[in-house]
Length: 556
Image (cartoon, rainbow, N blue to C red; front, side):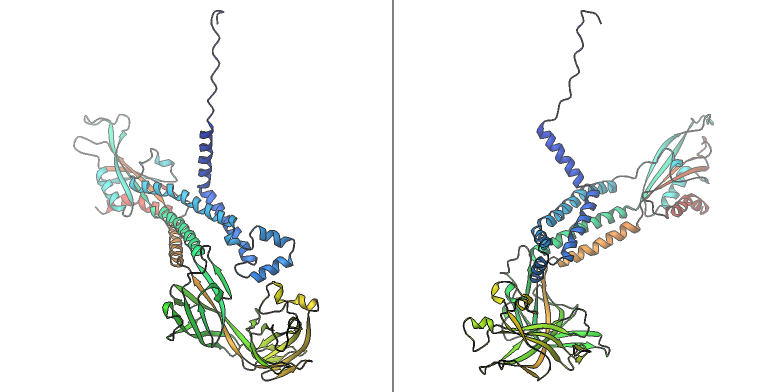
């Protein structure tokens, strides 16, 4: 470079993207990651893991008393779990976020796959590769007949395949000139594809999963469930959430538009073998719906386990039964009152030994502050077929009521019902006993007609029992769609597992040079096969395809 020449200008730095373009690029990358199948699988796994606390921990919507007791038993961990929504998992923001992201990811992943699949269906099978010997499955043979005739026979044997036939100019062997014919040999290629139903099955499976998620979400938004215990011989009317012992509404349900219906539980029958194994449970119930609810006309129904009663879009299930002992209490002032309270069967007792408590909050003849000091509680067990075990402990030896009896503790004092803290209807607050506010007055076993007398002259008599049934009502307008999507999901999964995606190519060209008098009388057939999956079995099918030319040639 001479002294008079100017130095070269420095290379210009690449322009940096502006802030808007940078944000758009970031959002585009986030969208690509979110709509990838890998992200969808991760979110599906997270959804399953996030559902575990809802199954392992008590939930406010299912059992508020048990949830409150759990928090009280774990004063350090419980409040933190409650703060982060572990006692209301399926309505928590973080669970909803996973659910929504999974839905978006599946939709974003499936949309381009669907268009790609449609494009594959509309497009012709791919052209034959140049070197078929490099494919996993390859064969070469020579058959009798000209190229076009052999090609016709092969295409006739490709039933059920999508195939395309193409002409191809193939250089002849060096020096292959005969009788003035140029040294070129026309070839025919045949491309065949099969197994498109596999991708269709994949799409059906994933779209069904999306539909199932939507159906479940709709059910959680506008559906509801309620459970109630009804004594045999009593009636129940569904008019508001207050009618139920436990009501679990959807997020958009306020309980003001429930469909009214009434049930009259007339009889209940339980069948057992001689060994005490249950064989049948059935309740004879009358039903009223809509404007007829509350009238005199009843429809007769037989309600059985796993056979719900359908009323105006709702389903009524028989989910359990038990016993309600009856007590007659004669107070010191001469007043006699009858009390009854359903007892809960012990979970692991097949003979229906049941526990419960009868709470008497307003004893007659007592006024002022003495009312809270003179409340009574009859706590104990009910045995349908009572027997005394070792030590005088009462148990039941058969699930039906053949010899009913009760073993009770009678307490007097303050039951603690005015403190605002919820209590189980089947038990008393043991803290009141520990504080001395409730004092045990008697412990005894009673058969039907027997009594116990307290120190103040109160006489408690066990007068009998009746049975109760536990009913659950459920309303889910999307349940039918959930069943449809579940069935199509299984169908799509089976199709994607059974169907194999595979391709085959044939290249046909004359084995001997053509002449002016006509084409060659023998044809070379090169076959190549490729399976889109590693599933075994295509090798045998490829052997059958490779024999197409030989089989059809023997049929001449």
